[in-house]
Amino acid sequence: MRRALVQVVLSLGAGGTERLVIEMCERLHHDTQIEVVCLDAAGEWAYRVATLGIRVTVLERRPGFQWRLAAGIRRIAKTLPAPVIHCHHYTPFIYGCLAGLTLPGSKIVYTEHGRYSDGSPSMKRRLANQFFGRTPGRFFAVSHDLRRHLISEGLPAARLEVNHNGIDPGPTPQASARADARANLGLAGDDWTIGTVARLDPVKNLGLLVQAAAHLYQQIPTLKLVFIGDGPDRVMLERACAQAGIAARTVFTGQRDDARALLAGLDTYVNCSVIEGISVTLLEALAAGLAVVATQVGGTPEILRHEDQGLLIPSRDAQALTAALARIHTDEALRRHLQQAARAHIESAFSIEHMLKRYTDAYGW
Image 1 (cartoon, rainbow, N blue to C red):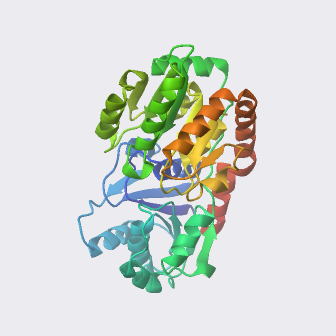
Image 2: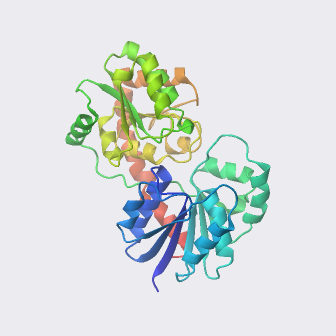
Image 3: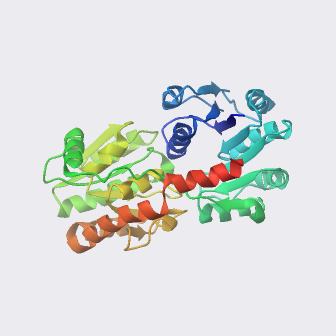
């Protein structure tokens, strides 16, 4: 009997969770019948799953609770033999759980990839989790920090496991890859480039990076700032760069499918999120051998140790970010150490093979 898997997501828009789901589909589809259910919209990356011969069903969620979403997941899962319903994020978990409860032979796997705010959990969610926490299945958080938060939301500690996100490290970027990426980004040979790959969203707090870059530009006139990605904060960030006098030194690429290749063109990578699960783009920056500065939030300290694979700073601290970037620029020995340690760390501790094995074991495969 062929294995069967239903991946339930909000969408296949540009993001770290979505990339992991796509990567799982790419690695499993040869011997597994896979269906992808998007609760909200297909998203710009849905074509990557469709090219594998995997059907993507969009349920077009509207505001408020909707039983039809659980019914839609059940309808698709019912066509498969003993399906695993893997739910990515909380809302897919709720609807996937309701679908699985009325579908004998199915198995629920839930992965929480992150949080949308750093506020306290609501009473409504804590009460709901008194029920959903007792349903059959396997529950995962992508970091120990996130696991602690899920416990505070009322999910039982005994049910919650940790499975860190993993990536394919890919080949070590060579000089030719760096030259190609810098040409693609319009960078000159002597530009010292700091940048990030992210959805331009308030939770990423990228205004902090603009503030730091503006201060650094006074000391480092060759500085270039690169934002790879798009999102609702783009206009605000462009305005902030103009007001800080660094618009001419800033590159906004928009959404790019070749974002990982462009990483090779950067000198230093920054993650200044106010909350974070396990950032896939941060893992990829480390795999690219970049010196990294990141806020000490969420699962990020589980990815890198301060002054070993990168520099950690407090959240929302522009002065600390400025100082860390200046230190990397001036301290060549530190910079080389961070670059060399980053790649080795990813290869040894954050491989996609390890992540995927944990999930397939949970599937019972």
